Amino acid sequence: MKILVVDDNHLLSMILADHLRERGHRVVPAFDGKLALAFCEQTTYDWLVIDLVLPELGGIGVLERLRQQGQTIRVIVITGFPELVEEESPRLEALGVEAVIQKPFSFSDVHDVVERGP
Figure: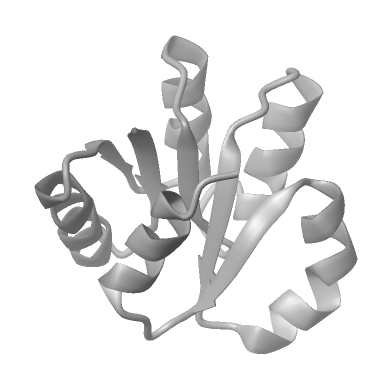
């Protein structure tokens, strides 16, 4: 699978990308919402793993733009703000988010969601 991992914590993004690569996936890390959009315009990804709170453009803003462009990429949201997930839950559902994983998390949690299929 081709996966775009987006988190403004560079270390987390790189380590998660490495973990997923070790499990046979092609992974590209990005560190803000605008970069994520640029990558999605250049290539097609199977999965987007994205933080809700990002500089420039947040995770929900990225998802809204991708959906407006007709992109059907599968989405896992990672976040350290459970109250934000609760507040934004209807929007996340409307945007087709398949899983929300709370920080801190095990990297295998992300891999398990990717592997469980449609």
